[in-house]
Image 1 (tube, rainbow, N blue to C red):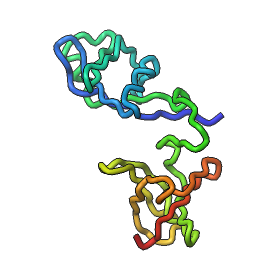
Image 2 (image 1 turned 30 degrees about the vertical axis):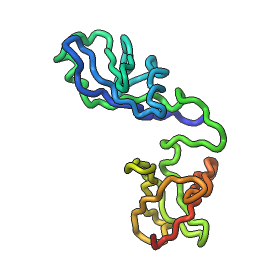
Image 3 (image 1 turned 90 degrees about the vertical axis):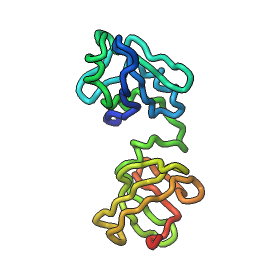
Amino acid sequence: MKKSKLVCIGTIGKPRGLKGEFFLNSFCNPRENILKYIDNIQTKDIKLSFEYIKKSNTKFHAKIKDVNDLDGIKEYTNIKLYILSNDLPVLSSNETYWHDLVGMLVVNINKNEILGIIEGLNNFGSNDCLIVKPSTESIDNKERLIPFIKQTFITSIDKEKRLVKVDWESDY
């Protein structure tokens, strides 16, 4: 069994009203999936106990038990919210969570060159991008952003070998 790690699923936003409510920023996809984890959400240090998480229009608001005023919830503003990776649903063999890609080796399929190791992923608007940092085996010392577009730039992901093969030249 693989070791469970914390996965960030959202943040506590600005306060809403005077009774300890706050806006909840969901990083889940779809965003509504955060509702499934209400009993498992924690910060890096403590497990949180929510009275509720509600969706109103396009936003979420929530309330932590025993936080009943504006000053109390202000202490939590901008804190990241996590769940254990074991609490996430199991994916099919052709799907991968972002956090599982971090640390994988990236290899160019055309020349079998090692481009680096995935440090993270980010979305810059049009699509997600792999952030690839050079490793000791890399062809050069360049940091790369590789668009995460399957069948175009990402040709395969081998979870067992921790290897991502890309159609991306080292001089791009």
